[in-house]
Length: 337
Image (tube, rainbow, N blue to C red):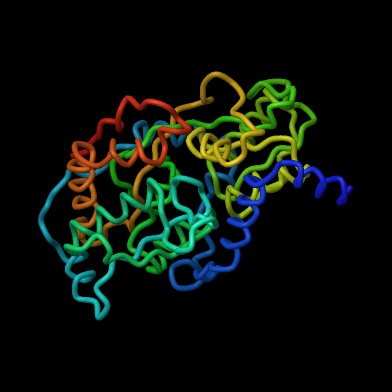
């Protein structure tokens, strides 16, 4: 079985090798501890992925519009002042480094500079707060450590294709939405899988730990919409593509935006189904304001106000347009106050 899997991977060519290389690189530079400080509270970052789907209806009543955030403000406050008064004046941002076109290190380039859509946004936030777009320290974190990294103070914020939802908002604060997406199936072009339907029955499906994809799969299984094997979970989403290339799984479920980027990496796979299963939004995640210290959240929302007018489209065209096509533009912000 192992030999057949490796043979299949070789057949996928250079793009497959690139995905493997990125995944291996990601495993080598992880700098965040599994627990520590607030991260040792015993809470799993993504109860949303591990908890019971039955809790979702009650949550919806309390949080009907999770993408709402605090109104924007360009004023400085105690949180921003603390960042500026550091000995090393840098904004510390949790990112991915192996999500193609979002946050990744291209193994075909000599430099190890992170690049992608999320990376552009992080630079813009650093430029506004510290006056220097390069005054940012990136820390690569896996999907299921994002909230822990924020709560423990390992990072000031996470800019990492992080879906805004009600459960996560109990643990962290989010900016307004900067990207619209939804869950979609990724599988080989030769596969008979057609989307979130009975063609997934009996298939092995991979998703990332702590992801909304895993939550969605659990809910679909509970409702008996699908009867797939969803036991394969990985720390980082790109690992799923590697598993698919090795023949260890039959399909991947992730955000359509990430799936499109993976399909761009490997032309032998494609998104299945005409439309995403649902609608989700990415936001910048930060520590929940304490004692009224909400200046960082409001400042990021101000940056996003400006970025939607100048910067967002340019970044989209550079990184995402090749895989996602023309864009209708960024989602309109929603404010709770």
